[in-house]
Image (cartoon, rainbow, N blue to C red):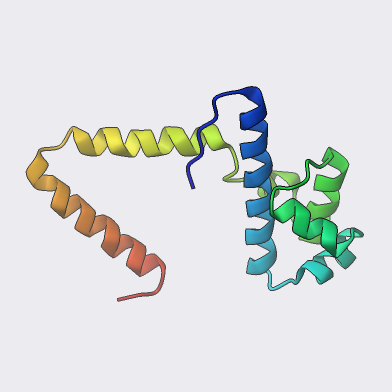
Length: 123
């Protein structure tokens, strides 16, 4: 997901949502319910839901508790979160494709779709 922010407040809201999305992604990948993560992180499961929906700004200590509950380091928790990197990467991809002749765009799209299908286990 690509987010753009126009102010510090918007940037903070985007970041909070990205952190919540990342926590949900990691929790579900580990097969944990919000209740189980709450137990492991010593946090209320309703609070976990609010964090995952981006409704709560949380402390560094709460982030550490969540990382511990997920059996991850803070570095692993924050991997892939920086919204600036997401935007820059997408812009780099678009720029690279735009530099190619228009005839190649269909081939590039087909390769991208094939790669994503392979990643997702589709044939």
